[in-house]
Each structure stands twice: as C-alpha cells, then as structure tokens.
Image (tube, rainbow, N blue to C red; front, side):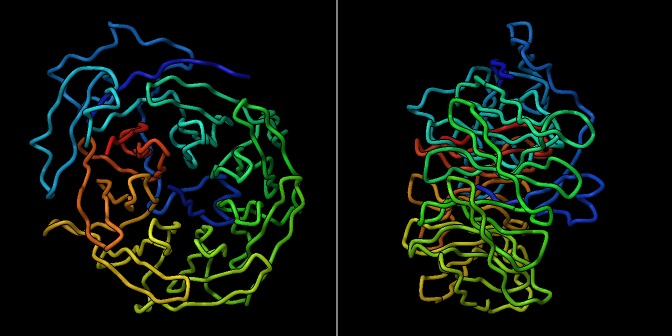
Length: 402
C-alpha cells in the first residue's frame, strides 16, 4: 500500500542498540544509543493535507510541536540556552542561503516505533516505523510516501516490523523485519517501493546493517554477543562467530580499507576482513563504551564513546587510536551517540540536546540546537549536504542545511 502526502513543517547516521532478547520478546522495540521517550501527542492522520488553517500563531514560536511552518536558525559557535533563536514563519527553505538553518517536520508516524533512518541515493530520507509496519520516504520539501512492509506477523496483523535501514551497493534499501516472536527476516526494497524478503534461521537476529566492499550487506547479529553476518544480493546468508565472552558487538561500518569495523562494548574496536578474520584494538579507557561507528572522510574510521568525559574516537586502518573532546566550549557534558560522515567532509554526531559538527582534525566547529527539549537519536547524511535527524522528544524529523 502506498500513500502520498505532504508533512507540515515547524522549526525550532545509524546505529541501533537493542533492548535485549527478553525485552524484544515483550516489546519488539529498539533504541538508538540513547533510549526511547514516549509522548501522548497524536500525529496527524496519514493522508491529511496541511492547510493555511494549520499554521500556528507566530506567538507560539517553536515550542508548539503541533505547529507548522516555523524555522529556527539553531547554528551556534558556542553553547547557549537557545534564547537567541531566530523564530520565523515559513515553509522549508530553499537550498541557497540557508546555512545553519534547521527545519523539522511533524510526521504522521508512530514515533515510539521509529527504528532508524537513512539517506537514500535519490536524496530522500527513508524512515523505518516498526509499529506501523512501514517504510516512509520523505523529501526535503516535506512530501512523503508510505510503503507497507509485508510479513505475516504472528499476531495476525499481516505486516512486518522494519528496523535499521541501510543503503546497499546495489542502490536498494536493506533492513531487518520482525515477523514474529524470535523470528526475523532481512528485506530489500527498491526505490520504487518493491519489497523482497529473505528468510533467516530462527535464532539469527540482525541488529544494524552496512554495505560491504564485497557487494554484500553485513550486519551485527544481536541474538548473540559476538557474531557478524553477511547477506548476498541474492539472499544467501553466512555468519562468522568470534570468541565467546561478555563483550557485546554494537554497530558496524565498512571501512576505507575494505574491511568491516565493529564497536565492541566495553572498550574495543574490531576489524574484520570479508573472509572473517578479526583483529582487536583496545581503547585506552576500560569502559569507554564505543557505540556508533562510521567510515570517515579522511581514510580513517570514527566512533562515539558514550562514557564521561564525552569523546569522539578515531582509528586508522592499522589500529592507531586518537580521542577528541566532543565539546565546543565549557558547556555541560552530554554523551555523543550516533555519528555519520557528511558530504561537507566533516563528522556529524548527536548528543542529548544537539547535533555537532567536527572536522577531520578533531575540532568541534558547530553545535546545532533544535527546539527546546530536543532529543536527537538517529542521524543520516545525504549526498546533497543535508544532515537529517530524528528528534524523539519533539516527535519530528529534522534537517540541517550546513
């Protein structure tokens, strides 16, 4: 089923951490690297068109998440309390002359079920809604298309529960689909919305995905602490199991050296060849808690460390590790979570109330504050320079024009 609509706007990349098998059995739900926050606000009904009557009074500012047409220049060069925000009415800005401007869309999704976002090769954002059983395509102008994910879920709903989308080397979307208790599939969706699914062994539970240099899709198997798997474009699955222990694999990326790189809690980065040979690199702190990881713009791999003090890590292909402060000025510390490489050649990462930009030299040059109380938990970088995020607290999809 496909539905098109335009999201109302208002102003002000990606790794998922699973709650664990016991919680999955009860809720079948994930969070990014920070957790879920629920809201009692209802999103507009899917298919409704926004009208002039939906525009919020300008006096409401950007605090009213039910409003539309509000932009905020949230770019600052030093942290502040947000009192300098430039609040204006209007639609999404044009691409020119919008540096540092943030636009958010109040999308008609079940935000308790959003389980990942990814920027597609067509310039749109793709959102997996685990609760509604849909993949949403959203353009920067706010036009959305919904694709329902099939999968005879055991509750009889007739829909699958998608999560953690990624773009494959074939230009298609790849993502996990929960189709029953302890029963997961991997799905492929073309940009035209044609969905195919591949059956997995019942005890395989892929967490997040990345496109490998070998043309396959690779994933972390969260059913077990130390497995990675790959699926070929034709659907053939193979897994690699490493030493049994208490460490847990979190996120995976394809590195500049054509190897896979995995964050491993509490304090390791693992390099894995496409033939399954692994090398461990131990981080300086015993409990640095590396989470999200990305192929950097400088030929290195970058990752977040979700422990105090907040840090961003860099590891060279031969294993040399450097760590950098995630702070811009003397602002209160918050922990960095998701990290992606932007089209501008910088690193972008989320924190508890902001999105930050860091140069390949390890210097934070901007912090972008969305509306007050913002809680960005997913991040995606488009080839057009736009950086997308999902604000859990505001129940919104946002984009930054850097």
